[in-house]
Image: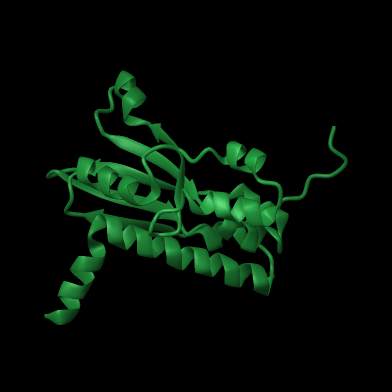
Length: 177
């Protein structure tokens, strides 16, 4: 039995980016950026003698957004058995070089690094990308350096979401009109 259990309540902030892209196009856009195969993280650790070597090894897998693919879970492949006919993929993505900027301030940031996004098929051949803002999960107690690092992650993830959903194009179009 545990000596003590500590409960720390917190509130997450969910963001949803609706896209005019089809589900397939959204999945393709995301994977074109972060990679189509999961990064072999443990192999990168094994082949690196020190932090500098690890950084160089990681950089080989980082996409334009600064993220790499860790895993994908095709929920749509199994929820059909329960009568739910939707395409849904949960994608785990991140970058150990970003994660360390938070982990050095609070090791429990590792609960939410790497991050996850959910890609969903929507009506009318549209799609959506949804995630919970990392800072709303990671920063649960006052910690300014952790909050600054987590907000940088928020900005990088939002930029990726805007880019792959095409929302950045829509924002600039709306601003111009």
